[in-house]
Length: 214
Image (cartoon, rainbow, N blue to C red; front, side, top):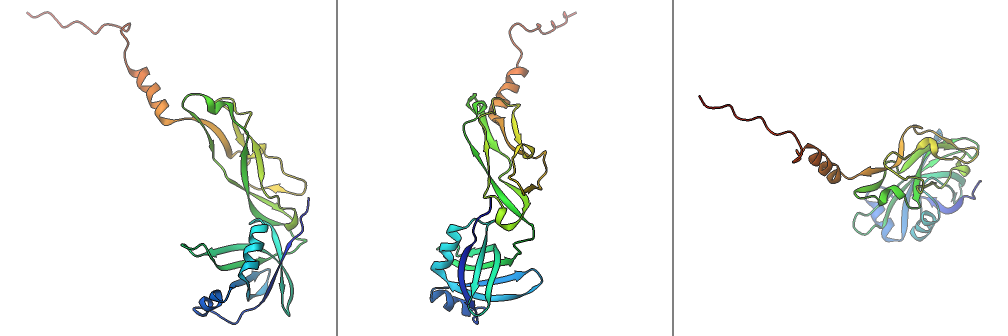
């Protein structure tokens, strides 16, 4: 199922380096666009518009940059830089893509349901893989994969990448044998069981008698 790309208005940028600080104070976010064999572009856009677009789109979803005087650019977010304290937008990198060319993207994996095996004493549900790599047309990249863990009834049950169901037109590139989720027994419980197995019981064989003194 395809999705409609979000549109973000932008314009050419003339401020670089330390001058970008003044740009940000003025309510603008620096943008950088590169890739697809085209020259890189320095752009800027209103920070509220950028924040709104990022909130609406997924990290793997494409969007359209409507550049004043330069037409439309079909892009995906490559990197978002934020201030480490205030979390305010500092810079956004975009990469050009084509609507008709398949691209690779990392897609999140979400677990849903309750795993019966995790209710056992000392057991826990562990998610081993949180993203899988896929290949698809930009507008057909899924927002994520949802895994139902209600079938994980004991420590022998697990979900692998091969168990994921990809929509038509989407190819999963991650190792099919990679673990996505499984039930594990916590280390403390395992250690207690090993210690109990190693401790002799009262019903065990008596120690050899000491030799008689001459």
